[in-house]
Length: 408
Image 1: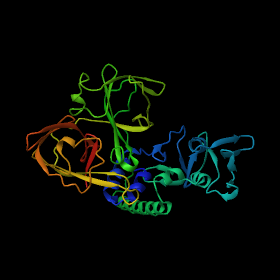
Image 2 (image 1 turned 120 degrees about the vertical axis):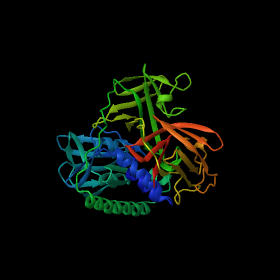
Image 3 (image 1 turned 30 degrees about the vertical axis):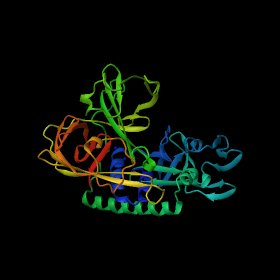
């Protein structure tokens, strides 16, 4: 459920580096599915053909990438000539199969020649940066390409030199981490798949997935998209008001009706979202990979101290930025301790005004988990029910409402 290098390089530029990066790095590792994704600024770029790694070079599809950057792609098959135009200016000309290219009126040597891969003309990733001035990165640890435009960098006051430095630190650290893992466990990892491939004609139950919230202004750094498919073609978007999917009452909640046609999830409120089944059988809505939410198995015990870290703005990069940390201790005996936030706002979508150093009074009480609902009763007698589920059957990684709590 997230670590595209973009999220990591952003959090690495912040004071709260370790907490945010651990949280988001863990989540991204769950959702990469070994499929190379391309991110343009903060959004995933949908392409008919994915990026490829060939002989150690990262290739990206020409038309999808450069047209998304506002450039005109001109392909002359007889000459095998590719021309990229930025307005009236010719930015790139190259011939497929040749390692020389003319970029912004200068001849450069490509890392590898452009070629047709899987029926799509692809070029080395570095050419995107050479032609447009964009910053490009390849993260081999989560199989993701990041492209940051000069406009985006300027608007967010991000310095390329500092960015390069932090990305190098991240990649070096990941290389050491992976080397240590191979020593501990030389067995190859099995590619992750859902328990059962999704059937778009028989959708039922709750699905959840995350997306990056650059700057933390929407939901504190990581947003969770939740969809619950109900009988009679009804759907609830977002977490239920009173706990898990088993508590949904469409007479009291904002359920919509839906239909699926031509790759679109059409909602009764007039909105339409792209929907499909991924190559590995996962449900994807609006470009986000979603995992089926399973009920918490009966008899599951929790005896861990969990952390949630959020932020608003980039500490040390943007003005008026802050971060916050919440601690939740679930004990085996059914009691809890909570610090940094009240029970009533434990599961709120975002509270970007919260300060990391806030000194809200610690709360104690009892809790009970049934199916996908956690019921928490404070020592003052107040009761709060919320959505609750476990990520990847790991009791050290839990979801409470729209927040991902994990054992630090």
